[in-house]
Image (cartoon, rainbow, N blue to C red; front, side, top):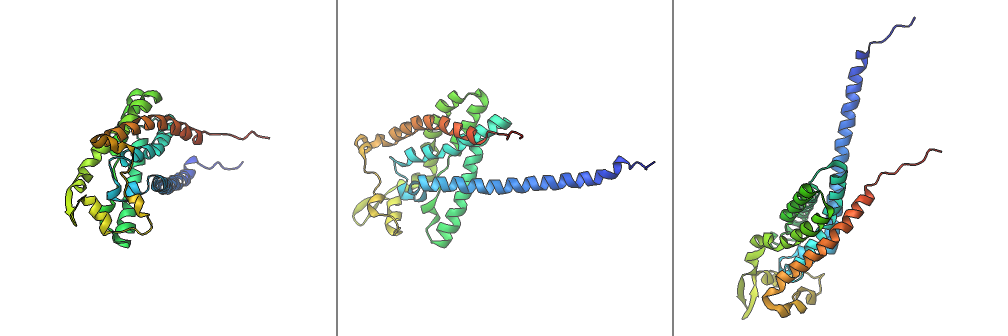
Length: 250
């Protein structure tokens, strides 16, 4: 009769295998995080573009309209995955934090140290308060409809007030060569960006200027309406990419 090998003999092997599997999982998570930061940052840079790059482009009309509308896309998709599969109400906050991390690395090393733009000229906007409200509403209501209407609207409406303490000082009026400009405009004239058509820098040309000082709230409420429609669309896109499919055995 063959001698039986005690089960305790295999315990160190199973423990080593579990540690290797855990280390591999951590490696995959880190690589996935970097991939996600890069993809969201690339998406944001190609769509929002100059309205987030330069302080003199952060105007009353297009900046509070375009930035939340594009910024809610990835948070909605990731919320669909984390909430539907894992019941984790942190998809929007995780997305915005990842975007800020990638944006700050780019602005400091590529814009400031490499191209010598002042860091005050290339400060990124923040969407963290809107993302926190979006996650909180989803957690409390567990409703896509309520989160789309109220969370999407809050995501857009909170954008301008939360960024005003950061960028309000650049709206200070100054006398520059007998012309009244803002501090942000002086930045734009002192640091010329040759790859950008100059007529595009004059960004407050539009019909909303007819309303004078009401351009900002009109843009914010328009963005709130569009974010409420954009949120469920990207929620469905997130669920589509998170579906698990199996091949039939032949």
